[in-house]
Image (cartoon, rainbow, N blue to C red):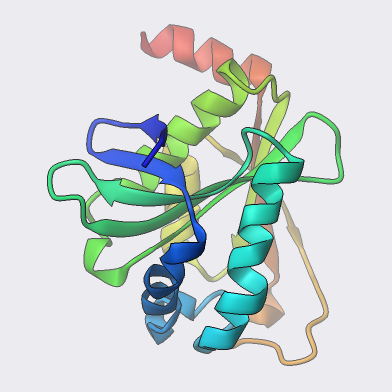
Length: 187
């Protein structure tokens, strides 16, 4: 297992074709999927679309992708963190999906902060963005604690909207200059 990134308590690595069960377990918790799709991701979708898509990002965008996160102390699978390419040059999207049993332990903030730092220091990103449903207050709190700032509310039309969709989506972001100034101040 080659390490992509380490934090104080987490090890992040690239997913492999053998990680189907980890993703099936994560995406089978309706509470984990509540603000994403509102339903379980079928195994065949993970095997034939989700995981191959993750592996493809590694090949097409070196340094970016979705990374399996494990507790350093136990090796237990925590969930995933991602730095995804966007349509805007120099901008990457940060995100995460964690097992419900690990919620409330600070992993989301710890992993997100580490990925933001990596985006600016190692990958040459100029801006990091993230978004979630406006009603997803826990993820919004993680975004703020990770150094992202509220940018806007926007509305997307969905064929089968989730409860709360009517309140819109929110975007948070930080640019390299702002992040660098805050990193110097916190050092």
